[in-house]
Image (cartoon, rainbow, N blue to C red; front, side):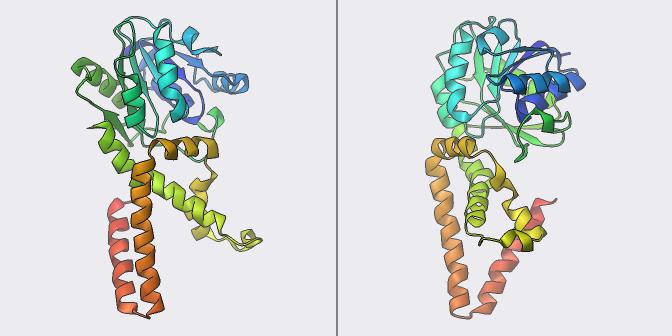
Length: 280
């Protein structure tokens, strides 16, 4: 057992899955959860994701060895700084947010009690929300990015890697900036594209929606408020990705307008090779 007490702040899908995985894989002996939603807390308790619940973060972190913030990205830094005032000395703080640069820069140097913060992003999840959809295997075989800056203590980075690997993930270390540039293309622009496509579907299209359109637009069902915060935090990188997507769509539009089918074939073939290389 690596940690005596784990505190999970936010017991939605990801937070509850962390609790379930930590208990199943014996990463932590006790899991405490905090959430402002009493119904969500009760569901997490019923699922066995947490052993004790609180509606205030400061009460949940008091004796924790490791604290994971699984709340919207625009709340993580503020919650971490506030929780540090009530946390035990030398605790490890980490998170599961989809953006890193703004969070890490807002937290570093502001935590009390010798607490270290290592930003993290497990590349796992679902468009579904709530602890009722969580399971202990969510992170197995997936990748978690943890971030390092010039201010990150070596021992804290090692503890964070141990924690996330303990849940079954493969850990990759990046700077916060590298993380945000990467996920703009692999996570954020796919969501935005799904939203755009879902938004132009004609009324009544549902009756004719086969697996293709359902698969491509599935992630558009994600929480709009959560995704608005993500796009706000990673605005510049997402705008870069949008420009490149528009350029590619424009190229395809031009080939069709000019009936340049060989060029269109080449574009489709190149995309197929890239997608096939990703695997299932």
